[in-house]
Amino acid sequence: MPALVLLGAQWGDEGKGKATDLLGGSVDYVVRYQGGNNAGHTVVVGDQKYALHLLPSGILSPGCTPVIGNGVVVDPSVLFSELSGLNERGVDTSKLLISGNAHIITPYNVTVDKVTERFLGKRKIGTTGRGIGPTYADKINRVGIRVQDLYDESILTQKVEAALDAKNQMLTKLYNRRAIAVEQVVEELLGYADKLAPYVTDTVLVLNQALDQDKVVLFEGGQGTLLDIDHGTYPFVTSSNPTAGGACTGAGVGPTKISRVIGILKAYTTRVGAGPFPTELFDEDGEALRRIGGERGVTTGRDRRCGWFDAVIARYATRVNGLTDFFLTKLDVLTGWEQIPVCVAYEIDGKRVEELPYSQTDFHHAKPVYEMLPGWSEDITGAKSFSDLPKNAQAYVKALEEMSGAPISAIGVGPGRDETIQINSFL
Image 1 (cartoon, rainbow, N blue to C red):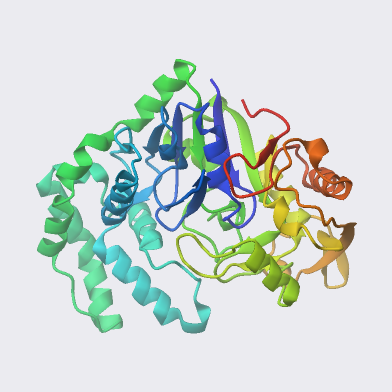
Image 2 (cartoon, helix red, strand yellow):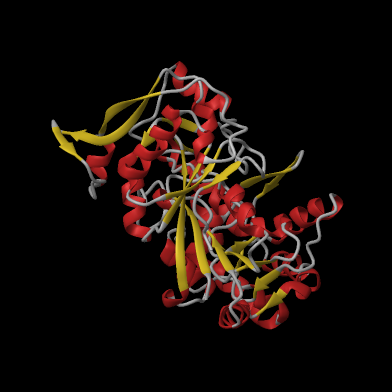
């Protein structure tokens, strides 16, 4: 049962798309198990760059079946826009499977997301405004709309009415907005039913049968460990579980079937949106990392906050995910620095702390304790093996591996599909 989970080990944007794509040729199914179109992956194939927001990265690999699991929230308009864009570029999207239990992002979820975030003012969380959080809230409150509801107009109407009873009160009386008409929402959602129908199936059954047949299934997380609703820097987190446990609930596969858990680490650290970030840089080094690394959100278009590598976060990711391997990305971005700081611990109230503090207050006040590692000036984008890397680059990778608590099995040395050094096989 070769089931692998591949997830972000920082705050997201680590390069999961590149890692998924690297495995795509050997994988039978690639499954998105949580999140929505607030998660973006950039995959470079030859001279072509693909920006994926909702679709699994495996959709770019011929022979691979991409799956949107029950734990994902789906905006149909975004889904069909993305499918159309790929079809126009010659990508076959006909194998896509969508869980009938996945929840739908409705127009009123998007409206609620935008008005509530605006209302928070200085206390903004930094959401993408795409309705992700309100959709997950509806799911937990048991007033959500699932994909399968589009095929029973009576049930769909009842559920939209139930959801809008409270939301219209809030929109009109608290936010001074117009009420949303039930009929309008129902009509819009029903308009997607026929287009969605060829993709909708019982993905839980499909995936478990595939694993029983020794097919290779890759579970792909959106966002990153530190954005997990339970294990991230709450409240500056996403609304679902991108950690490894989320793959089981978000795809309907038992934990005993997971064989490897691969964490994606950027060779430095970035974050989008508000929230604590101990190693964040506000100087020319931070600007250089942003410029050289092309650090702009695939989905949000926002500049990413940049900082040095944080080994405390990496150790935490290893622990809460049970990581068996790391994929280190963007090592090439660090070329040219004479010395490279690495955060090995925090200072909190004058005390050295080597593990992530559970207290939100302590983490907000954490100051990085750096160890300086020698840099390199040689171009590494042509490296095909670990021994091809400059000695200082090799030492940097080995130091990060030792600090992070799991072996680094692959290294990204450039954006291209072939610009990866594979040290150990993931399969």
